[in-house]
Image (tube, rainbow, N blue to C red; front, side):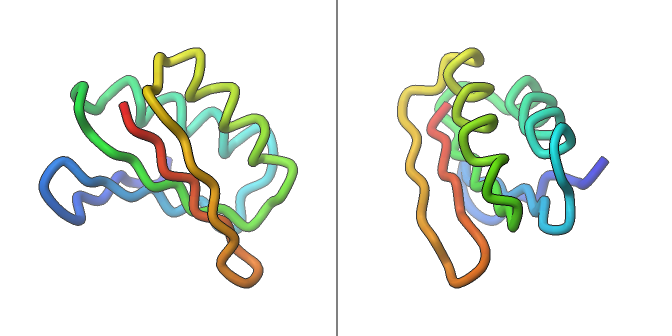
Length: 81
């Protein structure tokens, strides 16, 4: 499993470039279950179909908000837990 990197106060990053479904949503779900409430997780992907699946996983995990930003071939999904 890719590791969750702490990149700031209550800010974490999960780099899932190179992974295809179902792995991005599985790893995102695992990461969300490990992080404390009030944290922010940035998931970086390069597989467009995973965007909707990660959104669904985040909503099921009780995410407060979610933002998707295109970054030239990759996407950053910011999940507020």
